[in-house]
Image (cartoon, rainbow, N blue to C red; front, side):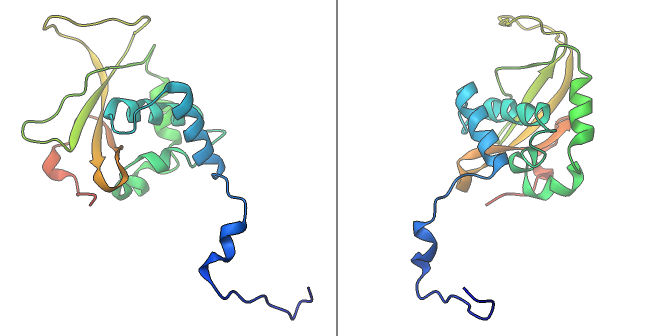
Length: 163
């Protein structure tokens, strides 16, 4: 094809015949999803996927940005600080039961615990030291949960709706 020749497209189906594959970051998320058996409609599973993305930040620097509330993307920066902060939590573990604020089904709090060296179940009410909390927000049109913040729980009324 000469430099002066520009192909023209007559239909939107032009791209349909091309082989498609996920971008590297999307591929990494799908691999993590398959390996961990994640449920995208479960806030704990999505918190686990976000942690996996942080751990793999050097290989897939764009992956965490696909797992956060769109309004928060600029605040996270390149996620390097969050990855460092998370790695500083000794023996970090994720609580398996999310907490939902009263009257809210679209916001969940997922606890990150420190010094978790084995799986355990808390069967009675007791004080547990929490290293931080992921504030998770349900994104109805995407059928998944996204991370809004980490640290102290964010009040639901302060979170912009997604749909």
